[in-house]
Length: 163
Image (cartoon, rainbow, N blue to C red; front, top):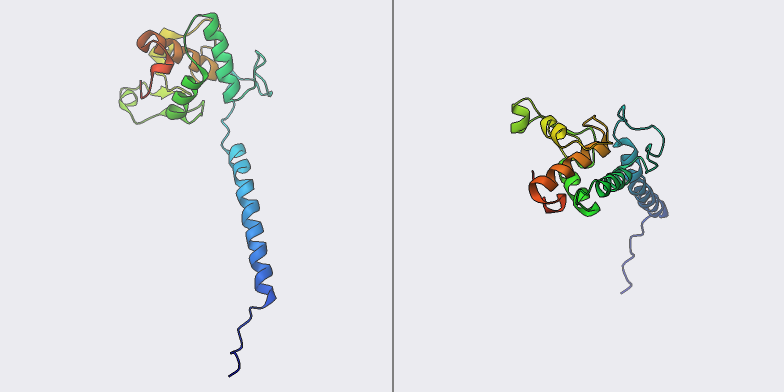
């Protein structure tokens, strides 16, 4: 008995599937680039629009942390890059314009603001000379928050939850 003929897919389907896979791969590669440009924070009045800060650090999250660490070293405020990064990612996901409008501080009319979600009275009390008085300024926010964490917990590195 002869073998039953096998159904053969038209060649066109193979080409369509190949193009779909290639297109999906290109979209996957492009999405992080699109997301990275669309999710950038709006520039504040205290940051430069150039690719570096006035102090010469990159005008991005890495540069803000590094500039804060340099100021902190000068002022003898303890803290590490990893401690700052871990806390600000938890607090604001790296958005220097973040504001919390739902917690107990917000209910009292003093919402937490900036990269490390500092309230105005804490920012003013722990402001570090040589930084901006704008709570949304990334370097000023990080440095004041680290100064507060050092006074309260010994270092930002010792903060592992909301503070």
